Image 1 (cartoon, one colour):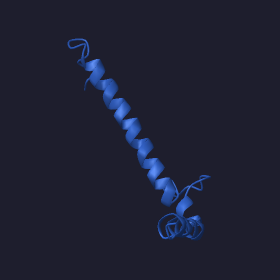
Image 2 (tube, helix red, strand yellow; image 1 turned 90 degrees about the vertical axis):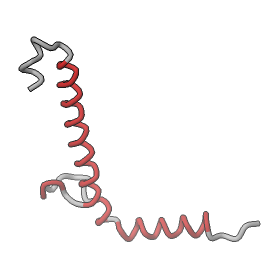
Image 3 (cartoon, one colour; image 1 turned 120 degrees about the vertical axis):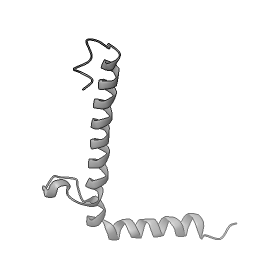
Length: 75
C-alpha cells in the first residue's frame, strides 16, 4: 500500500522500509527461538533443537554453577 502512494507522499517510503525491516526482524527472531527448542518447519537443519538434545548436559552445568556460585559457604 505504501509503495502505491509513494509518488504522492514521499515519506511513505520510510514507512515501507520500516515495515520491511520489522518483518525480517520478526522472522529472524521467530527462527532463533524456535531453533533452540525444535526443528523449524520440521526440516533437518543443522544446529537446531539444541536444548532438547543437550538437556542433561545443560542441567548438570546449571546445577554445578548454582552450587559453586550461590550455595558455597562464604569465607
